[in-house]
Image 1 (tube, rainbow, N blue to C red):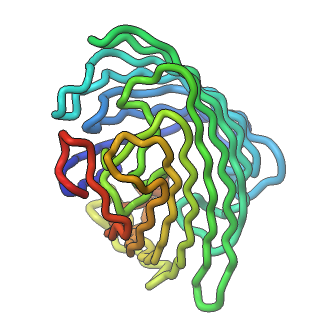
Image 2 (image 1 turned 60 degrees about the vertical axis):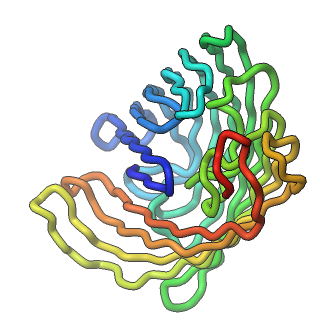
Length: 277
């Protein structure tokens, strides 16, 4: 993942290892660099249920441990260390998580974390659940609906709280630090996906094979109560459009470059340390 917004640069990479033809066990690793933290994770996933492809089963249980060094985000937040352990279950009938015009699924997960920062020590817990479905439309199109709820308890560091903005679990029309809460966040998404072309074979020096170009018109509604801004709104809306450049890395692993442009429809001031959204 390579993400650039008005103010922030985020980099992330993840990969997995497994035995040849083993659909059951997968060992996953990731590293990341964001304005909030630098760190990585390692875990194991156990797959079961009906076969979707020769490499994927429809159900999975995963355990993951992670470490992050917490950064001050340029606004003087407390810095320090964060360790966490996550347990998750997912069900996914899409042919691929990178491109699909039909399918449905759901997921649930819980995380326990402990942090030691310049402001002190603390522990917290979080849990979340999501559900989605894609209605297939004629002509390589699909209409996706998605609903996700996350909640927190305890004493999390500010860098780990629930955010309004974000590419995957936030509203894409807002900066990631536009607003945060330590209680609950609910996001509803409607997205029209469409393919411009598929089946291409554009080779970039043997390292990347570009095969598909897709577009997505999206709208989000986010419920974020008790957030840390002076805005009286608890519900935020945004719309936007994105492109998905989909291909294969080294002709082995699928990958996607995602470019989303979002427009916030609920103007609101950020915290006093920030400019207006």
